[in-house]
Image 1 (spheres, one colour):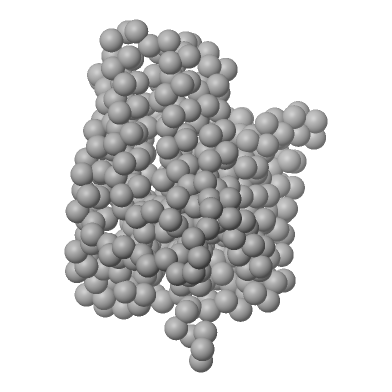
Image 2 (tube, rainbow, N blue to C red; image 1 turned 120 degrees about the horizontal axis):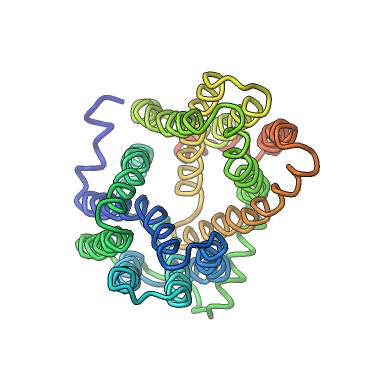
Length: 408
């Protein structure tokens, strides 16, 4: 692909507004975790309090994701995103006011985060399903990569900006910025104009559409195989890398080394997006599952060595693997799932990815104490690679090609 082709999605007016809305939204989303953590600690200086607030957001997301998929396949997706964005602007704005004014109590933040989690569950499938309606099919790869460029850049800059804002002005003001970005993103999304979808066949109930989504999910082999694998893979990543990782790093490569590793992962993501703007991904799931297995590398290296450089290199390679998989997965979904079913398919994907993560976070502490933190990291890395590569035993996964090649 030349430069003109790589940036071609930006010639589509609807995509430009969607891209601008997404970028603004990502500014707030990358700042929000830091802002929320310090807001809770400002109200109650207790890690368990932070856990309660995070759980208040996560549980409704698990409960309502499938309903969000049905809504997004029934209603205009851009409209859902607009309404949801304004709701989130209001809840985050109220949280910001409570923290800034000094009137916030823990129960208030828990209630507001529960509302946030519910709203996010109801609009995420719409966000995931809208992109294919905005660009021609031949530009889907470039559109997804442009999204990844913005996401990767802001993932590096957002938390740092939030930390500076928390230190300089306070956690409440960082929450206020997140509220403003939600509102602005909704205003920009209002400029996206997509023709109404024509529903074919008999009208069905919400329960009927949930059942139809489940039937599609279980009959689409490549979809359920990868989603099932990621229920385990995400549990391993959340438990081994995100939970045990910092504890092991503190005793081996140090806090700075851990920071270098996380930064290297982000750099790997960003550099890979630049490459994928110009390289066509012909077999999205074969390449995606091969590259995502690279997440095993930093796990094994962190458990097996005290040296910073190997872990940093492993994290860089893992970051590259994450981006290739994300691109391949989105292309598989957007090109091989019919538009009327797409948001429901994404909701099953998100549910499978999310549901086991708390299990990993809780279980790995006990596993580390019982068997040794480093030993558990190494075994987890091997298990991660084995599970990722095992998906290629499915012909449906390894032979899936880009849509325009299916009939060839």
